[in-house]
Image (cartoon, rainbow, N blue to C red; front, side, top):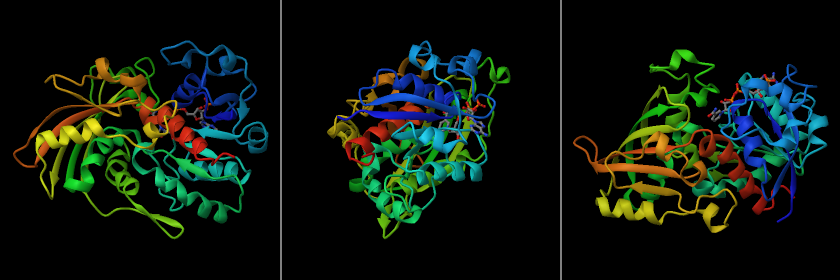
Length: 359
Ligand SMILES: NC(=O)c1ccc[n+]([C@@H]2O[C@H](COP(=O)([O-])OP(=O)(O)OC[C@H]3O[C@@H](n4cnc5c(N)ncnc54)[C@H](OP(=O)(O)O)[C@@H]3O)[C@@H](O)[C@H]2O)c1
């Protein structure tokens, strides 16, 4: 595989730091540029991040010396790289403008931001679930007037546990409705216990905008291309409650499902065990070998024990049993800044590279 020069826009933030860590020693992607706000621009990456470094591994040596660029200097960044990852904390309309400016500068953008998730010709992709949505990119390039440039996004971190668990059950058994309660880690807000001490011994029953994303984004993932747009699916009906809990990393979800054709427990377990998608078939470097891991133990998956399964790229499921109101209930867990953010972004970029979208 060809090597690609990569930039991270928002490199100093929580998700940006994950990108910088994951790109150390990546077989295809070589980090050559980091960009952030004017507050960080002009400093070395090491100076700009300082005590904010929140990763479990040390800052990569090669990244320390990179001079942080101003993300708004699009040409300066775009001229050095083959594509950028983008994870910034800005207003939605500003993010939309920034991502489009990079795409128009012929620099593809793989984004973790929510701003473009519902732009009709922007693919929102989980590589195991809807890789075919990348086929909308030529239509987006026609709108933007670009040859190489485009925007592709990954979905919200909250749904990265339950959508993969539901997906293999959709076609044969037809999920009609889902009720989901998520228990989300503080790194999902870009925070640690040091920067958010109010979260110690606490639970906050509100995460702005999260319930709408958790209910609506799955329907775009299960949608289809019609002309120059992606049309969302109209079912299953999903209702969600999202809580912030005192955990550093790892989003848990309690899920209740009803089906048109109710499967047996054994059929569900078989679908989960056998499920693989293009990420596994193409043997992408960041793909988990086994995407869905089912735990038989009654007290698993547990956040601290299981969030790093397959380098934080797998989804862990447990406690599948029949329910009195819905057909089945279970719990699932995914690492929010790995599979749910930067890791999912890197996997999407690997899919784009393997399919030739960066050439
Ligand atoms: N954390 C998660 O688990 C997660 C999961 C999925 C998606 N996301 C999304 O990813 C994005 C980043 O989240 P985060 O948690 O990494 O946030 P964060 O830790 O607050 O980091 C924000 C980043 O944005 C940069 N930034 C802020 N204002 C800017 C400006 N005006 N111009 C250019 N850069 C600017 C910051 O640079 P400075 O350091 O210079 O201020 C920093 O690099 C958000 O859109 C978030 O919704 C996060």
